[in-house]
Image 1 (cartoon, helix red, strand yellow):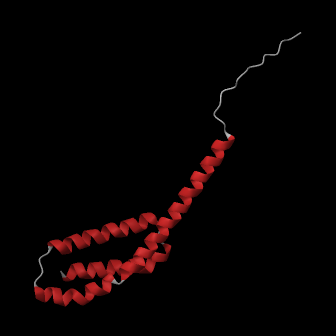
Image 2: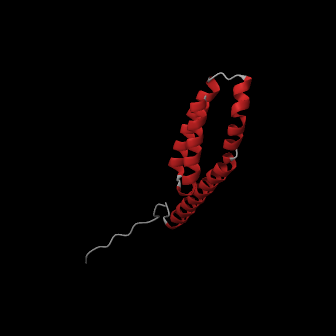
Image 3: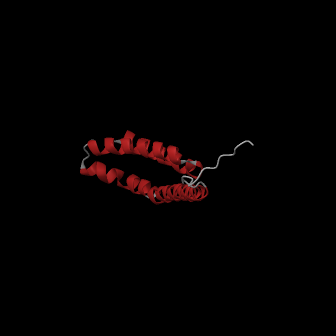
Length: 111
């Protein structure tokens, strides 16, 4: 359990340092790594003494969650704005590119 807590602490420290520069894919990679470590922690049985021993460390790690959540919301909002711009552009393009069939056809004859 010591190794898992240490791994999680190292991952979170690295994550917090790099957070302002991370893009969506990098955030996803960190979330995946974190999930693996937490799954291992859940599957490792711990006694009450161990839980008390790690309680403070876990509480410190949980404080990072609000910072990480705000970055995730920021990335979500940026993606939503991009999607809105694309939709608006598509609507404008469709307005100018009429999908209609001509009612009549003219032929020029040579005299």
